Length: 210
Image (cartoon, rainbow, N blue to C red):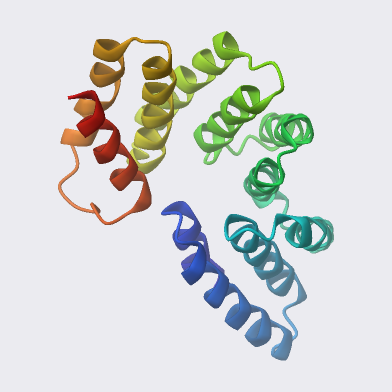
């Protein structure tokens, strides 16, 4: 149940993620699977944040994360903390997002679970750029690191997400050629999934950079 919702989150389909998380929460509660129900609560909170309800979603996510921790879902903690950081960004709280990201990165080092490393580093860069005084230098390094990690893990969606964000940053700095060279090779390597939000965003940016 939770895997399908996580897949929707990975492709940034908030509406489907919300519907599936609500269904999963009901089914898990009916079967006495409290940990899975709490995880669904976190996933649903992420979806609500993406749909403009971050102020309501954040307390829901914090409660769900605490409950999943008690249920022993520690290997997923970096992932759910990363989702919480994204919700804080939606609520325009980049400093809080950075604190949560640091917690997620510390948890990665502690548990040795690097599956979500690229995504979390990318979120860190987003938060650095959202600060009142953006830290573009460190954000650029984070995006570059996220791309390398995703490429090493063959996580192409996370790679193109980080590459698109880096290309946006370079474009804003007037580095048009560099922005295009950052994004075009990874975009051209895709043969499917062009209806996903990340690929649509990448395509739109490449057209702007043409």
